[in-house]
Length: 361
Image (cartoon, rainbow, N blue to C red):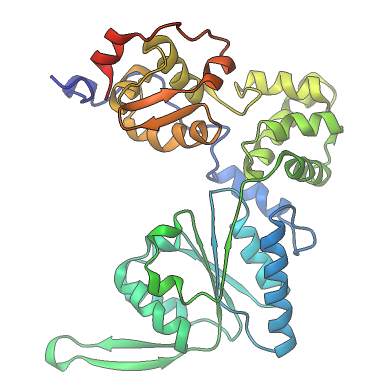
């Protein structure tokens, strides 16, 4: 039997469920409501992404000087780094309305045609997760971006006719977390492409201070640094942690946040000093304690944690790899020396050969 395959009894793990993670970079309903109030309104107020901001500022100023619409913009990067915020800033800088939709919502060319035909001149169309559009809609978008025209097919079979529909000039802002999935013909039609990087701790401290001011929360420099250091380089997570620390401070410390209050609050919410939560530590703990640091197959590791393999691979592993705590190898997952140190464990002086031979990928 292959020990890296799950049988029927393990298809639905009965272990802990890690929904609604505090350190999840995707937005939930509460984030969407709060972010509207916290979003910066112009490029000068936007924190971080210095290169993208500088380049985008030139693009927008040149377009305004020409009295033309701005070039189409593609923003790529992990969730929570500010792609939607930048799209709204682009519209504000161009003094234009913005329409927001997403790739999964456009499954037919007719859906896209309806949106494009109702745009006003100069309007900004923000298309989130643009890589998830259907292929027919992608092909219609090529002509719309380049020639500001779409062909609407009327009828079927030999009697079908194409009716050209002229579009007013508009600016498409596409956002994607997986730029590699965009077909080259679509990528090439964007006049400006910006990649959003993870934020440095100092930048996140500025984000925390600004958000605290807008939320009317008292916080000192050490408290902001404590929250920023646990935010995984992501402003959305920093703002979410700030709100949870604010709640704790209002109940336990008369509303003021310092390093001790921030650390105590995040201990309650199980977010440690490096930003790891319960799921991250469960994965590392199983890898270190049960399998001697690996290598171990992904499915076996997922069963040990009590989660689906997709959850471990797509939710926990990216951050652990980025932090240098876990490595993916052809033989399976392997813990790094930093993982042993972070959990306060001592690596074995010799390999656990029997265990690795049994459970390794």
